[in-house]
Image 1 (cartoon, helix red, strand yellow):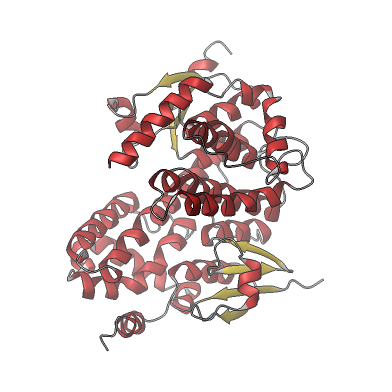
Image 2: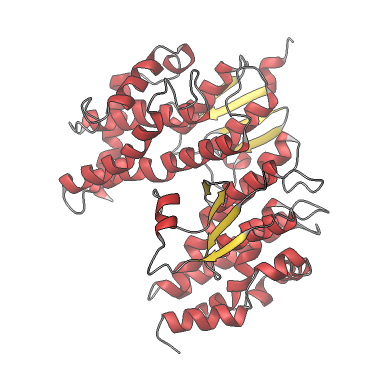
Length: 224
Length: 215
């Protein structure tokens, strides 16, 4: 067991929801790992060597095997370390979790952040379009403690790293009340539930630091 | 209870082709329904309210959307003796990585060749680079997964029926730039599931030319 920690390495970035969700999964499964913080602007030779195709974090290295793309890494972790399963067994439930996770990263992320920053059709419309997408997730949560049911699962890790602790910090910085309690009671309850989960609360970046970081990203988007 | 499987699709969709191929590989009987994207059916809007896009796979009344998610669903629901994905977690992740790469890179770039004015040259150069990356991944293997036809082959092969479009509007020749990839595509076309799922290249090229008002 002595060298187990060195068997798993994670290249990540502290403010990246994609990298934080992998840390949540590793902690959930009780896997020891060596964390290597990356500079995502001035990329290390190691990162470029391990992920030449996309040149991004997170990258997981397990016994010399290299994995990139957070959703794939989460599924690999789930299949390799069997405790506290993240994905359901049923093929339909699994397909649904994958569908919503793709929706969170490919639709909710950009529309609820970059599009709101740019507000090409005005801020009210940008917020309306963002809330339209978030409503789909609100419906998915109805009657459940978590997307995964009674315990956190794949979609909780994906949405949980993206929405409450990344997007929400940017909304806070921009002084936008994107998910008011009266409009999104399920989502707000889910966020409160997530806060009580140790592996989640241990893996979220420091609030003020993240707001500061997100506001820098906002400036970069505005200047682009 | 007999399985009821319906596929809402469009004949020219390289994404729908993936699902058709996977269903055929697993010998799943299904009802194919052609959608008119100018006049979407109420079933499509009900079954894919989030994206309102094809293909939509409806299995016993429950819908699965997104073509690569459908391929995995088909593989897991009808396991049989021909898996479309490897069982080893790392090999599986590797296959899914390339499926994801194809999704993120190929269509977005290829579309710009014919759907956006003034970007044909740049987009076609980028497409060749992307196809060469895939060619390097294929290497000397028979299929992307090795000896057996599988997920990555299924993810990419539909685009082969669109190569005529990219050649014509991008003023390139994918065959001369990526001969190994073309050889792979022809191998895939020998499979009944693929031959039946892919329309003829000429038909797709004519269709797009008509859409652009050029024929």
